[in-house]
Image (cartoon, rainbow, N blue to C red; front, side, top):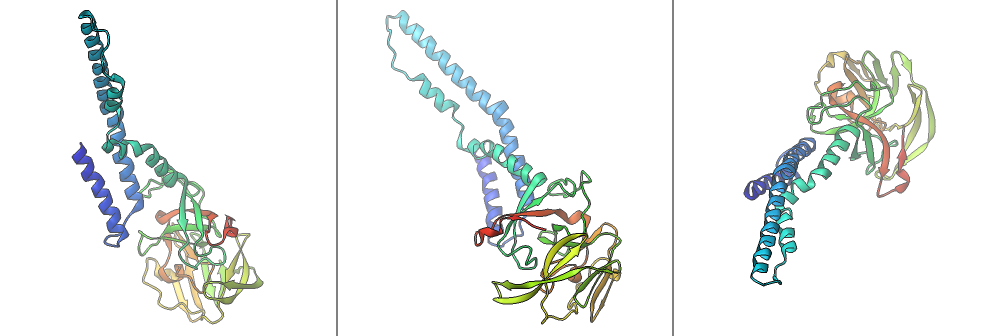
Length: 321
């Protein structure tokens, strides 16, 4: 078992190393599932086979020592130099290959359950959601709000609450599902979403926007016009860059692209059933549904709701809309 365990641990280490150095595209959900499965099997083997075997050997050692003491006592030898307890401790000690498998199972399954069904942490890598979320924000995502999903397969097993306009949602990027994206839901199934001349309209109704003081972007060292937008009675802030045109350049080919009409003024899309139209709050600096299309329900990861840390700015900690 030592050799087998060594090969298994080496395989895990090789996978992580290859992922880290970019030799392959890693899947953390799959890695965590396999780690839970493997350590769980070792934990069961330890509890119901290996540990009873060691306990049996320790009991036999103690019985043999007692028998030896009795035999020596009959010969008039009362004192025996032997440390049975130390020998038993060594026999009962868990070998290294079980320490690194069965011993880690309680921790790994705890992380697996927490991450797969309750809350998952993410780090904001880009400025597409400024001013709501900043680069470096560490956020929590509710994994059960939209319904529980099986890990790895992402198959929904409970209904949950359907995504609503205004939700900040994490999802698997449709052109490359191994990547996680975060944007705001602006269109739900059946909606007609129009973004023309940098004004958002849902089902023919322009959203209410109010001007706010300009936002200073520390990364670009520039000020940008900032607005408050009412989306489904939920206010949130957004940025517009007056130097950028309303035209959407370089839109990809995507499923249901026929539902969209592009013009010099922007784009109008009819959201198909089972899909969502997503946009970043940094409207002129966001690669979103305007460019790569709709997000299918099967790609949903969860609802983002809380910044739990930003090491560069502790004031960022808290909930957000």
